[in-house]
Image (cartoon, rainbow, N blue to C red; front, side, top):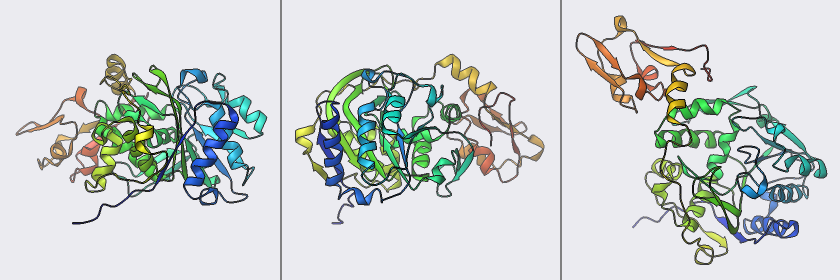
Length: 376
């Protein structure tokens, strides 16, 4: 019988409050369990700390990475370097304008820089499942290391938002909406996008703030719940899989993990959990979100995708009837009729443009509305 391929180990440490010394000790212990800080940061390297700043919310709402958790990560990093920046790019407001999070005070006190991620660069990822390049910030090329500091929360579309989902924040500002609208209600398609983004620039270390997490209708309207956990891992997929296990959530319920597992040819997602055992840290009765569209209201989705996203245009004079587009369309919104050509049900289109990419006759064009949020 073939042996199971183990994922990277994950450290799980108890931490009952955001009291600074307790958080500092918990982060230090978690990194020590993974072999020590030298594996994640060398002296003098420039480090980017990617927080989870979904919106401008007070720490007690458990929407964002807690400022005490950020402070502890900064102080841990300062044992190796003082070249530290804290960065993110919320979807609907400037990161530097988020005054309720407590990040500005921490940055000022710790003498580190807050940076807004802007779309001034492109990150190529030829191995992508769906996308081969992404708009990004040039800061990613200017730092030596990235530490990912997600908040442990539920998510209406992705079930959980943890290490992998938090790196979606590398996509600057409103460009995120383009990916949401392109995926539409297809959560597995959106999961593939998230996996591509994460693997395009995986962080060097994932430190998950699960001291107080969020259950229920996350990622912003759920209920804060004291979990008392700090989870750390070098690999985001292993980290997320370990947390799902602690919460009692099957991999099949977490689209990002199910997608990753399929890319591993169905191999079980198994890892060594160091520190607290699974039995000791198992979270009972963790409430997951109700199934929904993932936070995009129906009306906004119907209007937005028509007027703000490009759409495929089918050129009948060039179509040879091969039906490749019909076969590759993940939304199943295309049919071919003899004598009429391609029939397109636009309301069902998720704007993935697989049809245009795969058409051997160049019989599909892309029409870009003036209000488009997304540029090809």
